[in-house]
Image 1 (tube, rainbow, N blue to C red):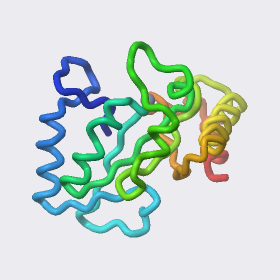
Image 2: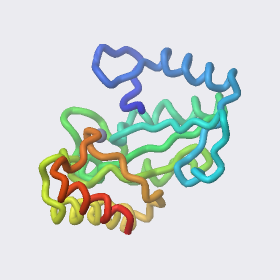
Image 3: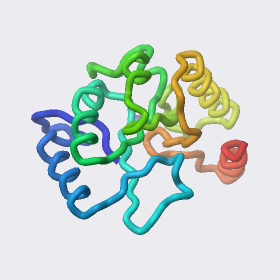
Length: 171
Ligand SMILES: [Zn+2]
């Protein structure tokens, strides 16, 4: 569960390039098999899924060569609003960058459109937001797996909304 990759970093949720390379090297040496969510039915003992949230440009800059070097794969969860409008002062990937990622090494998946915390939002809002997320990717001709990383890892807390939320995800 990674986010940004930078050469030098003191930020939370950012891994340094050196540290990430050490981790990838370890996974490769120990013969871990990186998989996509689309391959869930082929998981073995040494399967691992590497994920990167939010679509930062530094993923696009650093990951292709690293994944190839260590024979790994990664899933990137895209909140489409961050790609359209940006996020804070961070440089994000463009839709073209995402489209150009090599499918042998990258899988794209869902991370909502607005990237709001689902915890106290209505099921109608969430439905609309996830449809938006998918429609924008479809419109950009970006293939993705129907796998969702909840923004901030949060889903509706109230029992009734939570139940409706998981029922909605089934379809
Ligand atoms: Zn996120």
